[in-house]
Structures are given as C-alpha cells and as structure tokens.
Amino acid sequence: MDEKKSILAVREEKRQTIDAFSKDERERKKEAWGVYGTGYEHYSDTFGLVHETLPDFIESVHRRHAPYGLDLLSGTQTLASLDIGGIAVGLADARSQEQKESDENIRWQLTYDLLHERKLAWRAIRRTMVFHDIPAFDLITQRGITGFDLVSPDPALHFYHLQQMWSVLAEGGMILTQISSQDSAVLEDHRVYDYWSSLKGVKAVATPWKGLQLFKLEGAPKTLPLNFTPSLRELKEWKLDYKVGYLKTKP
Image (cartoon, rainbow, N blue to C red; front, side):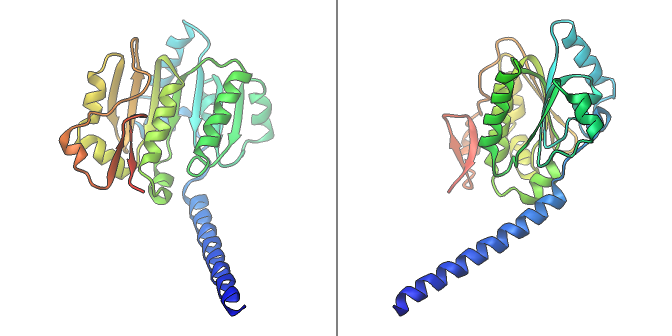
C-alpha cells in the first residue's frame, strides 16, 4: 500500500512539473510569438525587398491566373494588403469584424500552433485548399523568427514546414520564410542554398534577418533535397532523414 502511494505521489509530482513547464512555455510563446497583422511593406523590409517587389510579383501572376497566398504565423492582413485570396495560420483569430467581412469567401483564417500542432495545421491547410478550390499557392510567407528562436527546441521544425510549403507552392511561385538562427547558420555554412540553386527549377537566395527566398520554376523537384556532404554528415547533433529530405535531431 505504501509503495502504491509512493508511485502515485511520484506521478502527481511529475504531472505538476509538466503542467508548470507547459504553462511557462505557453506564456513565453504568447509573449514572443504573437499574431502578426501587418501589410506587405513590413515583410518587404524584413526580407530586404523593395516595396514594389511583392505587388509586381502578384501582378505578374494575375496575368496567368487568380493568385493565392499562404501566410504562416499571421492573420489575413498581409494577404488583404496585396488584394489576394488565400489562407493565414496563426495562434488566434485577431481580425476585426470589418476585416472578417472583407475576407468573407476570399481569405480564411486558421488557428493552430505551428510549433506543437504542425501536422494538424497542414492537414487543415490542405482541407481548406480542397474545399475552396485552391490548386496551389503563388506566394507563401512566414516571418516568425522571434518566436521560433525563443521557443523552438527542434531544428527539424523549420525543415518540416519548408518541405510542406514547397509541396503546396505553385510553379512560378515564391516562398519568403525565416529560419531560426541555428538552422540558418547550418544551411549557410554547408552551402545548401547554393546546392538548391544548382538544381533544375529551384532558385534559393539568402535574405536579411535569417530569411530565405525560394522560387519554384519549371522542372522543380517535388521535395528539396540536401547535399549530403561528408562535412554535413559529421554534425553529430543532426541526423539526416533521406526519405523526406530534411534534417532531424537525434531523439
């Protein structure tokens, strides 16, 4: 009986510890990784683009078909500022009633935690695409380096999201994304961007603030492979996942 009480006491202590950690993590995440609600000009500043770049790109897409955008860690405001339809994914729906009315049947806000609910979020994105007849996205943006740097313990997170973004990107489409400081350094040190740009149908450009600009051109691969160089293999804290083409940490 005493042994059973001891086991229960240990379990309860463990539960309280986990709960306390989770609460603390949620608070840090809420403070550092909020819902961005800015226009495209702020994204242009972050990625070192002149302000006309994104509107001009969208206009070029308009000549072929109606453009769609996907904005991660954000509200729909950036998509609205470019006057395009699409999907935004953030921790909460912080839109005003006026914004919701403006978005109706054009833009859709999903609320998911892309750190801990990454698979659920991407399933929801794909379901929304099917339901609203969105074939692919012409512009995909993600500007969450502050939150990722402070709360992400998993370097594979960025590569997972990057592969998912690539898989739903239209031919001729553009990705603007931020990679955590640690992972960005690994990519740059091992010339992964140069390797991607050497592939048919891929153009990769490093941008300010640990950013990455990716273009998907004709003949692009379905996934973004890594150049498995000996020096990259020697990084003991990383494990290569050949099946999906991104880096994973050792368990």
